[in-house]
Length: 219
Image 1 (cartoon, helix red, strand yellow):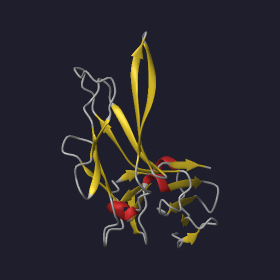
Image 2: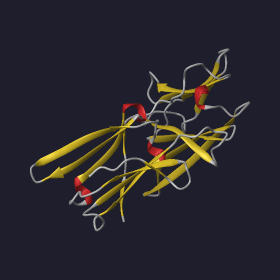
Image 3: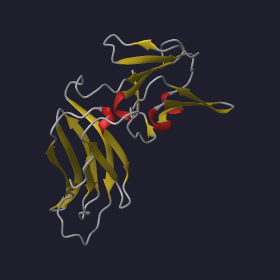
Image 4: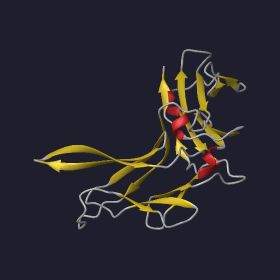
């Protein structure tokens, strides 16, 4: 049974309850679709599987969506929290914009991945993935007030042991950008291009959101 969207107590999300599932957590799947404007839910059954796609009244990301599954409530209840992407002026703390990977290049002379900043455009600043390092690197792009943070994570071998290193490149922006000033798109060399426009753009209210699997927590 699928319920309706119910506002959360803090007003920053809506909750969607799906009950009478009668299954185990490993038989459930949840993911974002359609640029974050819908979620896909599927359940394996004895006769196969069933899949539903729910359109949402606002855009969500993996960072704003979470789910819990209680097998002993209402014959199995999945509760999906669909957080709203609030404006940076209203957000508390950091807000993830996107993440991407830079593939390893064993021959690279660069010990870590840095972001290239393109400032010669009159409309925006552009931040591009820099040259590869010898290590597979995951880059998380985070907005913290007027600072843009590029958080790189990669594994290195040291004396036969694997050590995870984390490096953050911080870039100060002139102002706190709104959603209509942020544009994220695939980069031809791999990874993502992040553009921060100098001023709000008309009729642009959504950021690029790739399809993402949502982890379901057992409670």
